[in-house]
Image 1 (spheres, rainbow, N blue to C red):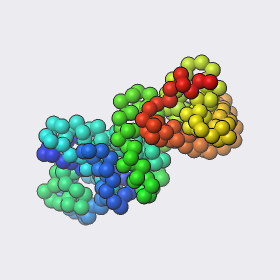
Image 2 (cartoon, rainbow, N blue to C red):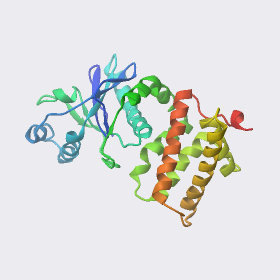
Image 3 (cartoon, rainbow, N blue to C red):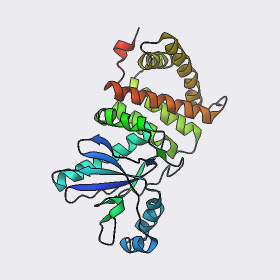
Image 4 (cartoon, rainbow, N blue to C red):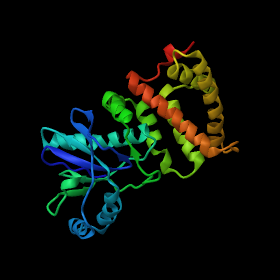
Length: 277
């Protein structure tokens, strides 16, 4: 991955997520609508130094519907913030059941890209590219991002949350349900750091963390987690996965997504000392 920076602002052009209005993600980062109007010949001229860059850009540019606008007081500071903004893309992937990729970087907004624009292929990885189309942010999504995204970003420095978010953002890069389940559950287990009586404890702590005030829902979550963990065990130990493996992946990912969102809203990771009965 190559992130470059000059001046005081840069744009990461995104696929996989679509916003029709600006969304503030922090004091120096906002998610903006984006559409690139370059035609084939114009883009070919911009990328004439590299056929690989041209191929990646040609694939990605028509699908860009949003962009991260990153600002800073100096090029050095901008480089750091732009590099860290890649985690913002992974967080967006994790939060919205989507693969958000940042393959193209520009020194101007997508709509203003022209013959003199500095274009950079910032990410050559296309894992999960356009598997599910794009996620169009709702009003509720935008409100959640403006309220909690900075908190989620702050938690990324914790290895437990980092593992959970990255697992959730990247499990679709694998095509095998067993690998997907193993990765998702590594994220769930990382949040709790449990080393013994794992099935019972992860079920109990998850239920108490997600439903602290509703006993009926807490019992439902406990039973659901315990059931899903059986699929996880079958996946990692090579035994038969009973039932629909795809559904087990979907439900496990949704469970991890609830946990990541709950951590973000509470600005803390699960504390097993307080969750224990």
